Every structure is written in structure tokens, then in C-alpha cells.
Length: 459
Image (cartoon, rainbow, N blue to C red; front, side):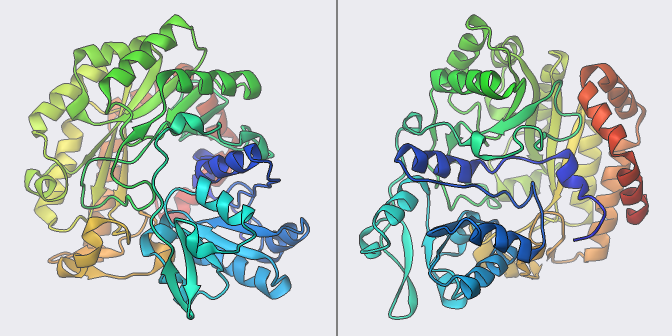
């Protein structure tokens, strides 16, 4: 590990909600659990393995993204060398999207959890790992090759699940924080109140929760917020749901309860502009919504039509203006390097973003994940370097036909530079002195590391 802090983890670290939900479910069934968040507490490999073996566990479960999978597997390999009797189970986005073929190339993994993990992992543990082929959602070896028991049905009633095991994180909420300048108060955290997505965007991986849409009831969410405030002092949350506003009746009831019960927690959410109208904006504002994030992705109509449900760009602009006028902050989410993009299309995106009433943007580098619909035919659209550690939306692992990686990097840097080096953006951050004082304090406290990082990047 280097001596310089990871800037991204200083200013944006989300608790591992998936593992926390599984941990809470196991605890409710009387199973003793421990949680280790390697992002919150990075350590050398041997230190992590020693901490695990020191607990003498029967089973160790890993939840890994594509970019973190090989790091997780290194830990698993070392565990098996030192304590071969420990069962090793992998789940999460990468395991679910690649599937049981992982077992063919990674022998330190004993089992996979494919799909939602609460019931599957509990049944694995409670069975003593006997008769695993009869437990739905389990990847196991049959005649030396990876096999799937059968598909696990999704949990129909999310309200039946306990709140995630926040109490199992030793430094919660102090170690965790939403992105800088995206919250008014601290401590803050993220929560998820729904699972699944009915849309069919080409770039989205839906391998864990599938395409149906299920959600917690408004009463459950409000109880969740009150619990976080009462037990941990949380004052602001980010609903990490892709489609927080999808079910209109749920949103209306949630907003009404927030007002009627005077819940002392404000929030951010992600919404689709198709769902937005004046009434919804008023509801969100009155109930304490501070910022709304929108996946805009591209400013080129033809690119958008290829990859997601299309919405007219002029209509998007009008709706964003309406939200901005309400007093809520507006953040736009963009993606560069999509299949079919060229220099002209990316310039359309940059110019469009600069025309929008946005306070903030997040620009990711398109990454074709194994569970995304576009993945199977991605090499038909350009050059793809399938290096899992680099597949984190921070690297151009895919280059569309007619483009080069160097040109994509130039356009990416231009996008960031032109958006943030404008007077209105400077003014917006100046307003954060009173709108988000904790962000300013955190920024100043880590200023030496920020300057080091900026110089390293050539800014």
C-alpha cells in the first residue's frame, strides 16, 4: 500500500449494503457474523488474512465487483493455503454476471451465490454445505465443473428483511461519507429501498436482482430513516436506487409521511426525467430532497436511441430547469465511449451538458460489464480489453470503431475542464460554504493530499 490516501475513498465511501443485508438476515436467524470492509480499512494481504483466520470462521463470504474480484480471490487463495477447512463463498455482481464458469478457473472458491444472497447464503450455512445441489441459487462443482443448482426466486416482500447490519461496521458512520458537496449535513450515508429495474439499457448489469422491480413500502423506509437517525445520528441519506421515483404512489406516500412525521433526515435520490413533473418536484422539495441525480448519459440523440429509452433532449432541458428552480441541486450523470460514439457525438454531449442547468456532473468511462446486454457482442463495436481490475468505469477499456484511447482521454479531460472551469460552477461551490459546511471542512482537512493528487494528474 502507498502512503498517499485514496482520494476517492476520502470523499466518497459507501457502506457495503449488500453484505450488510445478508449479515442482518443471518443474525436474525441466530447465525454469528462478522463484517470486514476492505475499502474502509485497506490493509496488506497478510494482514487481512490474519484478521480473518484469527476469528476461526467456518465460512468466509466475498462480495466483489468485476474490478475487485482478483483482489478478493487473492485473499481467498491465501485463506485456503492457511486454513483449507474454511468454506469460501463468492457472490455479488461479478459472480452473478460471469456465473458458474468462475468455478472452473478459480479453485479456491468452493461455492457461488447466484442472485440475491440472503436466503441462499443462509441455507448454505445452515445445511452445513450438504446437499447444496438442492439449494436454489448455488453454484457448485459437479464432476469437477461449475454447475448451477437452479435459479433462486427473488424475495417478493422486501419489507420482510431486517435493516442492514450497520452495527457490524466498526467505524460507522464516521468512516463513510457521500461525495463531496453532495450533502448539506453530516453524518450521512447511503441506503437502498428497491431492487431490480424494468428498463433495458444496453450498458446496465442486472444480473443480481434481475429486471423486475420490487421496493420497500414508504412506512418501512421512514422507519429505516428514523432508526439511522436515532441509533447513529444520521442526518442525510442518498437513496442509491436506480429508480427511486418509478412507482408514483410510493413516492407520494413517502413524501407525505416524511412531512407528517417530521423525519429529521434530508435526502438525495436518483430519478429518470420521464417520471418528473411539477407535482413530483413539489413533493420532493417539501419532503426534504436536497439533490436529484439524473442519468443523461449522452447529448447525441442517435447514440441515446441505441442504448436506452429515448427522451427528447429539449424536454430534458426544460425538466432540469424546473427542478433547478425548485431550489434542489441537480446532478447530471454522463458516459463517454459508448458503442457508436465518435468525435462528433462526444462533442454533442459536451456542448449539451454545458447548456444544462446542472450544479454537478459525474462522467464515467463506458465499461462493458459481463452482465450487461451489450457485453456478448461488444467486440463487434470496437476494441475491448477485458482486464477485470481496470473495469471500474475509470478506464477506457473499450474503444469504439473510429476512435483511439488517446482521443477519448483528450475529450474526457476537455469535458471535465470546460464544465468545471465556469463562473457559475465556482459560484455554486462558494455557496457550499454555508450549504455544505462539512464538505468544506473535509476538503480543507485533506488539502495536502488533494494537491498531490492534482499534481500527479497534471491539473
